Image (cartoon, rainbow, N blue to C red):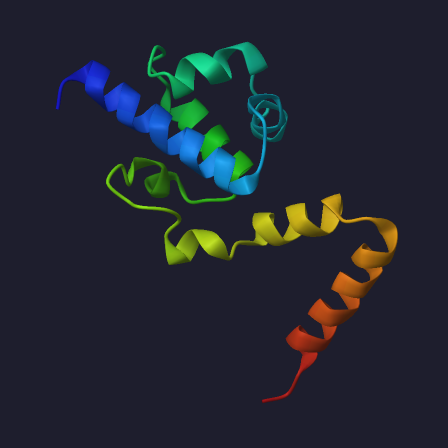
Amino acid sequence: MPADSSRKSFGKRVRALRKYRGWTQEELAVKAHMDSKSMGAIERGERNVTIDNVAKLARGLGVEMHQLFLFDARGIQPAEEVSEQRILDLVKTAPGRRKTLALAILGEVLNHQD
């Protein structure tokens, strides 16, 4: 696979994961501690991403680094659906009463004795 094709595949994967989360490029940039201007260039495959930025993107998206390279994956892989970061993001963005309810439910589930 040529380098520019790899960059485009990587960018499409980042875009797919970002859209799955329902985030804008700016929101991902904030979560990944990256410049929002570079996010579009990454997603279009115009920017060659360093390993440090791959790590930042993975943390920001709440996935493991290798999951950014699953170019042929259709949708989100099972391991990506449940992550601590995803749970934290859902709770953080919930309105007050829903946040309280979500925390109560999560506490009950995690403390449940099988």
